[in-house]
Image 1 (cartoon, rainbow, N blue to C red):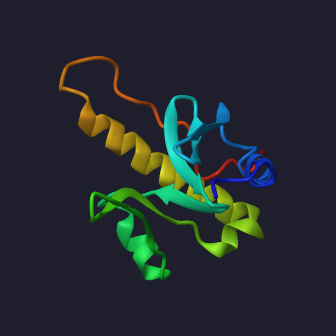
Image 2: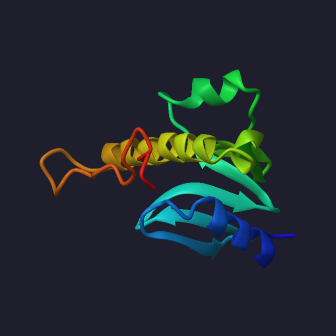
Length: 133
């Protein structure tokens, strides 16, 4: 089924506050980015946010489920969890969940970098979610 153009437009409105926001279609879905950092995944008109060991408990606490797919007879997971419904009606909730997701994406990217190599990643969204914006 993929992800519809209309849904991608809604995501653009939802995450308009995210610096360097962009969407890239990939593998039947779409990656949601801040610059080069993928913090969310859209698939079949559903949204999944990046989670890691530090933030997974917050997703579990709200009854969220991980994004999974089947490959070669095995169920695989990418570290993205279904976004909470509250983000669609509450701009502050959208900012908070986006920030958590961005922070998890930064941590994930940091673990891939070798120590002493390159500049450490900067957090791409300031908190506590700028009152001015």
